[in-house]
Length: 242
Image (cartoon, rainbow, N blue to C red; front, side, top):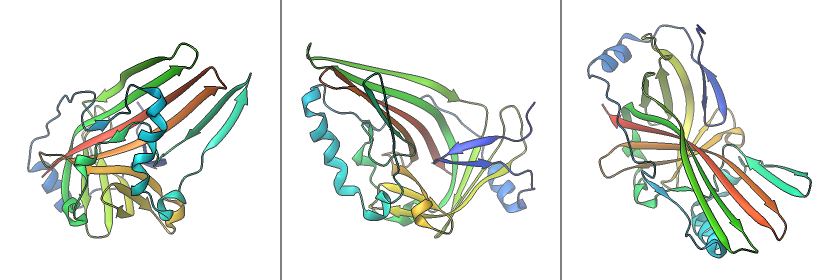
């Protein structure tokens, strides 16, 4: 069994370190039982209208939340094969499937504290349109829904620290230790020496006070005058305050 877990989170791959956790962290982790929940597939997501000619309009609505600082982190890759143009980016700030704006964080201090995972899943949302037929197709599926591995998050005024276990194991290891910034109550930027090389995710708090972090892999495929397909793969982490 692999002893080191590669946790692909927010574009950067973090190796869970085998170093011992501070006793105060372990005490806080063990003070409450862990619980995992099953959430609806569309939990706190906002999808575009079913009228594909309105997609660009829906897509642009969220641009008001973007900043120059965020856009500096965005580098997409484009390729063409047999006339099919493909563009993809990870992690993406401009996405076809969005975190619902009802989760906007009004004060960045709301995220400070200890959080424990209650849902850890990867979801695929795919929207396609065939122009000549004026037909629209929407598909979604849960790629994985992790119930065994645990994640514990501590957020201070300036630091974002994440600890986790490998599936089937109980020893907690440090996974992420980073500077962070909450931008416009909607984006989480994790960074080291430079914000320009940081990783962006969408962040929010739901009506029950749970913390949501969505990291997006986006791909657009299109054949001119024939069809267009948008695929969003979302790593969604939902935490409950401890």
